[in-house]
Image (spheres, one colour):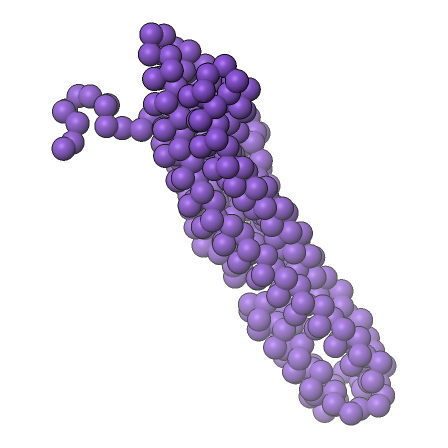
Length: 320
């Protein structure tokens, strides 16, 4: 039977706070587990609650730490491949110089190797670029005069392939971590409710003492956070949300994708953004909204300058 209209008797008030974000959930869970552990010697019922909840919190904290580590690996892998892609033009200049030293520009042999020009190597997706590089390696073939160049290009292609593989593996690891974390977080949500109800039984004559085991200020703020997620198409500026920031509010931004994104404030959705905050791929930051521009403006905009790759951002507004 559902609760009567107008009551909250059937609701778990911790659920919203725990679901607001992984960092919030990890902090709330750890604070409660620590407080229960510290007081377990004062009452056998609290000791039982510690025995019940401690392993749930421990498993959750281990998985959160693993995700943080995997995200750092992903960010590093993404940075490496972005650096490699950006360095392609410099590599191409070196390759062209070595080819021209053997075959004059405009000759049949030159055109066979570099048909389409240098731009053909950095147009299209990363997969297409790698295919073009491999095509050049094949075109050089057994040409002894370009053997050194072929080895150089092969090293570049191998490094590019390896970095793409590392990025894919790290992204999958983070994805797997998220699934595991959500399962463990749900276990902790139920567990914390059980702990709270158990503490109410211990402190039935003074329920406020049960609340002392919980980080109530954090829970209060977490339940009032506003969270927005958005996939950002390539080469576009989009509105994340409309919000007039108040004094004391903070913003947490996570770039979940593999391309750099920029966030700023605008007077209207079609107005110019005067200040852009750069959010690197894989980066999470917590900043004062003033870092995004004029806080009198209420349109929060995101820009993806990449010509090919879609971005992914999570934008959280925390109350004062």
